Length: 194
Length: 411
Image (cartoon, rainbow over all chains, first blue to last red):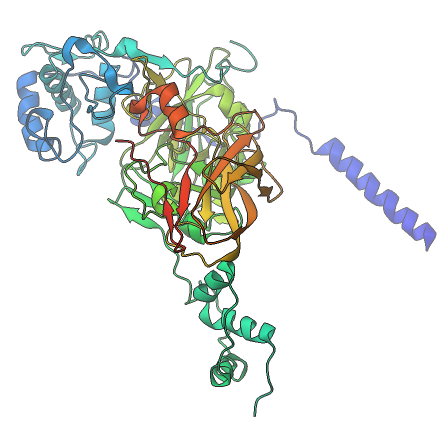
């Protein structure tokens, strides 16, 4: 009985050691799962626009076209000229571009007084608006709605055409107000380089 | 003639028959008079007929009505006051959607990982399930989880029901990063959902290598549609909005993407006329879940119960006050105390019938102490609403036994 027990124990130990030797995968070893994707397929999904303008599609828009589109697609939720709607106020500046939001919780945050990047306006409208039919606007139409909203916020002139070349260059009034939370430092680097 | 029953048997019968009410009255604990024997007889009926048979899918007792509280079709709140232990039943996990709950076919839905990678790849749910799996318990909390307009007749659910806890199973994100290979200069990634909002957030790569995972299961079953079926990003301890549901794409980059969610929303204006970007870690907080509104206390023993959690690590201790903060005592913590997890705390208390104000204060293992409302306002400014309001909350016990939220309006 004692012998059997010893045999059983050593067999189990041997199996465990074998598993240990065979099974651990080095971090560098790849599992070989997933499927390849073509650049064309990636392009269909890769919709984000960055603050430097990368990702902006070809096309352009005007304030006049944007006004027409806004009245058809946006006004019912966001109000006439971006104010007074049932959903977010989109338009409004504060005198001298002050930024009293931390002191006064009553002020509505708008594209003109709060949003730090103009590229985000394009990204978000193309991503998620108009709410009843997200993704239904063409790139030119998105550029036009962006142009109209920037015009209403007194950030561009009425005759300003908006396209991939000039959108990222627009300096939003509150851009310099934004700071990365530094209470708990986060190391943003790649753990193995960078 | 029936035999005379012991008090213990009567109470046992009562609990079975009267469900919630009996549980509630036994909780607040004053002895009550004996029942007439005819009523006691009726309580034996369940022992004199066969009960229901087995079933393919279980359900809650008909005596239990616990529900989420939906609001404006964009959010629903977990009934914190009705739950025990630390796990939230999956169908009671809070919801916050920005474009509704999409229907995604697990046979065709895929996760694309591209950008600053050696090889862009798409992964199916089946691919993810073949990979080494990890399981952990953690909370997910919406960073806008305090109703700043709550009046005194407010339940914990109405006040702060946008936090829930599950056991999540999935694949470590580092496993997937290893699979695609990252370029040395990579430092951020975009996480994007396949819902109508195509919700997107930028995440520092370090979090991806730390404890991030792609979760496909919740409390032992496939993740619920409202929670991101067939899979979601899970960033333990980080604000709910970054835990992108219905995940469809990760793009690796060397800069943040500055999406609408992380700029015009989910930023914290400060009294210095600045606004914090990427304030993603949920700081320590706690909330008493019992006794709270609408409980009416009876004199005698009760147990003060609640939840405490921190996005920085483990809860170190929870202090409870019954006199509005004049004196504090350490609550019992229900173990195992897990990192970035709801931790149940309890403290037995005998209510003598006088006025009382119940408070709880969490401290985590980083040394962070849950602030008072005043400390929060002094440090950030009143306008940092509505995100990351993790201040100490109070419950007033009136002399008639009513328990009311100690409401202090913010605006």
